Length: 284
Length: 295
Picture 1 (cartoon, one colour):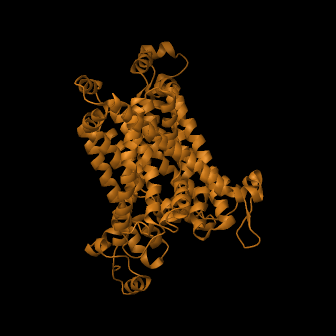
Picture 2 (cartoon, helix red, strand yellow):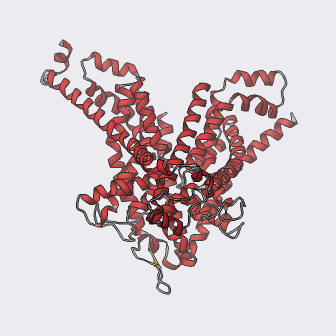
C-alpha cells in the first residue's frame, strides 16, 4: 500500500511540472517586458505605431505587428475555409471510406508535415514571382502572399477537425432527409452544416491559433516593413516575424520590447486556443 | 420522383438535382486545389534538390562563401554538405526527446488515472494551451531561461529545451489517449494478482500501450525537427560540427535559413530542404505504420 502512495505522489509531482512551466513562462515574460511597458506604458506600447531602434531615439510600439498578424491570419482563414471545408466534405461525406478519400486525406496530412521554412522557400521562389507578375508593387512581398501561404499551412489542421465533426453527424438524420426527397446538397446545407456548426467553428478557431504564431514562412514573405499595412498587397510585419528577424541585434530596451510582443502573442494564442478547445469539448 | 413534388412544389426538381451536381463539381475542384501545393512543393524540391545529394552532402560541413562562389562560377555543383546541421539536429532532438519523453509519459498517465478530477482537468487544459503556444515564443522563453540563465551564451541545450517544451503536450496527450484505449481488464487483472501499482504502470500499461506511445513520440519528433524560429533564438548556428551542448550548434533548418540568405549557396537550399522534408515524412510514415499495426 505504501508503494502505491509513493507512485501516486510521483505522478502528482510530474503534473506540477506543467504548472511550473506555465507560470514560469508567464513570469519570465512579464519580467522581461516590464522595461518596455514601463517606458511606453502598457496601452502606449500596444497602440503606438512607431518602431524606431535608433540609439537615443528608441521608440517601440506593437501596433504595426498586431495589425499585420491579425490581417494575415484572418486572410488565411478566409482563403482556407472554402478549400478545407470542400476537402472535408470530399473525405467525410461524398467519398467517405473510399480509397480516393484515404489518398486525399493522406496528402492533406502531408501538408502538416512540411516545415514552415520550406513553405517560406516555396512561397518565395514560386508564389511571390506569380503575385509580382500580377503587377502589384513590392516584388510580390506583402500581406496577401503571406496570407495565402498561411492558408495552405493551416488547411491540414482545419480539415482534420472538420473531417471528424462532419463524420459524427448521425446517419439517421441524413437518411431521413434523403427519404423526404432532399438532394445531396440539401442534405449538406440543412442537415450536416446545422449539426456540425459549432464544431466547425471551433476547428477554424484552432486553425486561426496556428496562423497567429507562424513565423518563418511569414518572415520570408511579408516584406518586413514595420508599418501598418495599407492594403492587401502592401508589405507589413507580424508579431512572430518581428521577433525572429529583429532578435539577433537586440539587447536592452529593444529586447524588452520584443519580449513584450512575445507576451502579447502568447496571451492572444492562449485565449484563441482555449476558446476553440472549450467549444470542441462542449460539442463532443 | 414523387417525393420531390411533395416537399417542394415551387422548385423544379431537375434544377435542384443540377445544383447538387454542380456543388459536387465545386467540391472536387476545390479539393484538387487543396492538395496541389504538396505535390508542387515535392516536385520543386526533388527537381531542384536531387543533383546536390551525394555522399559529401551527408558527411561534409557546409562550404564557405569562397568555395561556393568558385563552384558557382565554374558551373559545378557546390562542394561540401550539411554534416554540421545533421549532427546538430540529431544532438538537439535526441536531448529534447530525452528531457520530454519520460516526463510527458508520467504526466499522461497522471491525466489518465485522474479522469474527471478538477486539478487534472486544469492540467489538461494548460497542456492544450501549451500545445498552441507559437514556437517562436518558446524560443524566447528558452533564451531567457537557458541562454541568459544557464549557459550564458547560445547553446544546443537552449535549443533542446525549446524543442522539449514543444514535444511535451504532444506526447502527454497521445499517452493519455493510448491509455484510454487499453482494456481496463488487463489493469484489473494485474491488480487482482496483487501486483504493486508502480509495477502495473511499468510492466503492464506502458508495454501494452507501447506502439501507441511510440507513435506519439515519433510524431512529436517529426513536428519539432523542422522548427527554425526557436533555434534562431537559442542555438544561433555553427560552421563546424559541434557536439558540446553548451556551445552554439547548427541544425538543418538553421542551415537552410543561412543558405537562403547567401545567393551563392542557393543550390544547397533545395537539397537540404529535400533532406529535411524526406526525414519528416519518413518519420510520419513510420508512425502511421506503427499505429495501423496497433489498431
